[in-house]
Length: 145
Length: 102
Image (tube, rainbow over all chains, first blue to last red; front, side):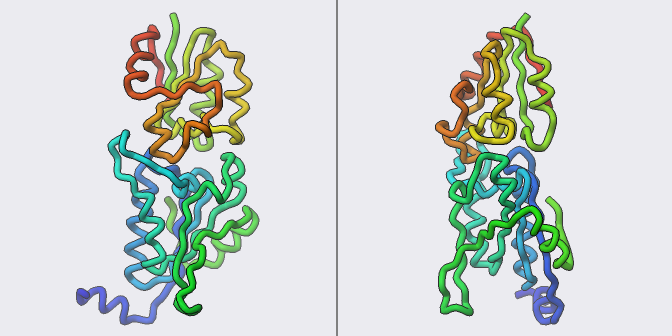
């Protein structure tokens, strides 16, 4: 651990960060950049959650195969978020419905709950549009992608 | 003169797809590429815009872009034909001009 990391993790400052994702993957760099920043935030022991709304829900679709377009398939990274203690992925129900999707179309993303004998639990929580305002209002910082 | 229209933006984020459909004529074709392929999926809020077409305009979606986004061919609206990169080139040569709705 570098000196700088020690300084950060040694401090008591822990903020609630919400990464708000509204873009589809691959067409723009937003989704990949968001993931990179999420992992940085998690490394500094912050309270991190992710929101997926509008075209952002497309980031979590299962079965992505990018071989033929010659781009990196970064979708498996979402499944590793639990290992970084990123365990709250809020997905907007209405955004899924507008796109003809349901939670069954999304990747299965889980984490092991250390407070519950490492039980495997789903990271994705379906949230109504009306509930999103409260989620945003509860944050210290919102990062938009 | 027949026109090949390409759309590379999500129909939920930009008006490119909608504007494209309003500017097509009989004998034209629309090819959905990149984030434009989301318009080809069944059961979405914009699916009626494609399903409601009278067949005068041919509809295509680029297979590699569908696969990258996790969209199976069975999820694609029946009137949309899935093509590969070779099919893309064929379309370019088949139509007189092309217009990209960016």
